[in-house]
Image 1 (cartoon, rainbow, N blue to C red):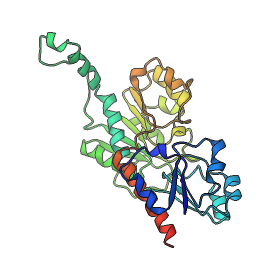
Image 2: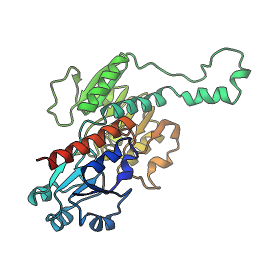
Image 3: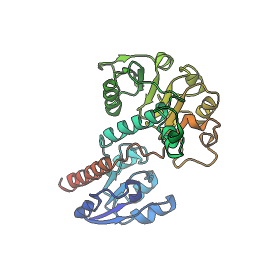
Image 4: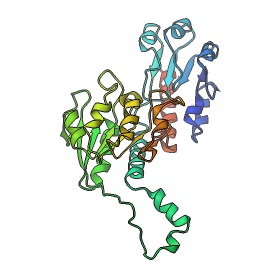
Length: 312
């Protein structure tokens, strides 16, 4: 069984990566450019892909050889699912592996904005603390999460985990359902405007679809409190990036943290890279999902999906 992993570099080197070799003859390509995809899948029975696109043309051309596509992620938008079904190619993704990693990353970004530890670290290391007349430093301020309203956009598995952690800090959790169907929750459900207007933290954990694309633009950010923080670990196109850059420079909100972007990697001329008030903005390169534990669980999920297919 010939198995090809088209973009193995995207999962790094989790301790169980070599486990995939038990399933067949596995070829690991660190990255695959669009023009390289056809050559690399032509003899493959099973293709593993994270972000490499497998469109209708590729699937139909090699459907006689290709039996399965194992997606090394939850999102499946890089594979033409209709074409796969039409040509009898099985497609399996892995869900739920990054819940704890994304939730932890969400709060890491939040607390970096809320409580600037870098300031205090530099204050000590550059010698200013040693010259201080008092034992502490209150030159900058920070607030507690306790008692603040924590608004979550998209209360799925990850959103629910974030809600539980926020509650542990004694925050009030509210949420907005992007589908309009998620009503059976122990938290107060608000419409989007009320959530934006009243929340101290707005954290996005929604999928990208027709209901969420460009959901947060300048007009929506303008409704938020000047002291509020916006976090997006969902999907890049949910937040309009030029509008966010403008809002940060206009000081409409206290800060924002993004782990996902419209184009990844982002272009050098992305307006988020050129904001004047950069201290109000944290940008991380789509790493919220990628704890060692999460990547290990992802490989286990890929392995289980392929094993189940082979054992049919």
